[in-house]
Length: 556
Image (tube, rainbow, N blue to C red; front, side, top):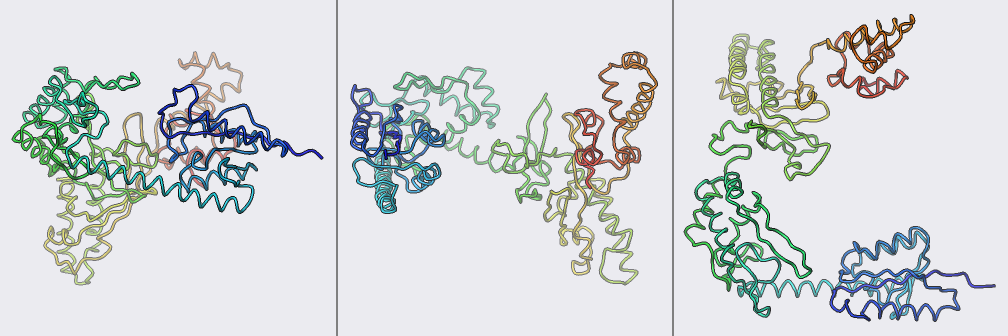
């Protein structure tokens, strides 16, 4: 009986790219040794596959290697039965990554063998030996990394430049053996201009615009491969990094510490201190406050509200078409990431809604004489009048009067919850803290927002029935036009008579097939708040009535 054929793939790797340009390099040597081993196992049915899986100049601390990814793809496709490597650490130096690889290989009945180490993963003893060797390989990698970090730290303490792209204003020393920076006169002048501009304008945005106007550019660096980087307009972030980089003061930074460098300073100590003081003062200004605007009313709800994930709503602002726009957004969106669960609410609308809800809540308790716990009629009337006056003040002054009363708030699941500060209410009304009804201190109301184009409308509180005139008119036309078509009027003639397109007539007529309950809700004004005529016409609705209700948000 013949042995089953075992398809063998050879994987090779080298951490550095040194020597890879030679005619016979380390990858070739590994491949040749593995090929000889496979040939020695020909009697066992081993056969080498022609494809090569090589990774040159890539560390074994990551699985994101082109050759390895091609190998894994072929294993998943069932084209490989055995992976052959020169040494175990050629495949990976991470114990966690190795566990993932072995599990993935076992799922596809693929084994693993090392040429210079007498074991393979087809036996339990082989897997044990692999884990032991890989633990040492990972230990070696981590110890080497620690040595490198220690060497870098010691070198920086001596003021040496440890490589990388040099900052704007400096070039590496012409002698590669001297780890120092030398001043680039033209770029140094750019750095001094940036510091002077900030000392004058005290605003990063203004400095960014003026730097663009006068033609200041970032450093143009040419790598050894010939790739060119930089030479572009300076962004706001790049300018801030320049203004806070102690290298321009003649220092070398290592983590949180700085040490005297071997290179000369570009900026004098006086200008550096002045700019750092201005930056510190600017960072102390509350987020969402434009320069020159008082911070007292810029973001009165800052730190007050959280979304359903317990993420704080953070104030932010932008300019569009010359208008200053403010928002409250989930903090996870500040970095610019995309998250469909994140909130982005227009600040004026949210602040007006919160003020309206608090004023209404206080007025409602005052009207029911439910401000205090006690049953004394005279005290209750006096307290209700004081709370009613506070409600009027909030309606008059808006969020500035309401924000001081808020302890915390939450948005999510179609509700808004606000907890009020009993001490602040007592100060505003002159009442005793101990006498307040606990129900006065918490309010919870429905909360939703509806987008119409670029406009976002916040809807909160108990929503009164409000029939949508556009949708009702469309329903009326749908039934009338449907009757005309049933009586024999062509769609083209009908469209001509009502002076609209045939496509529009067809889309409106389709509304006659809406569920009777949906049509009744539209007539009564009890439809979901986000249901508009545009949404009804945007997509084809299902014919089944229960499916229509689900698609349009009518619930069960």
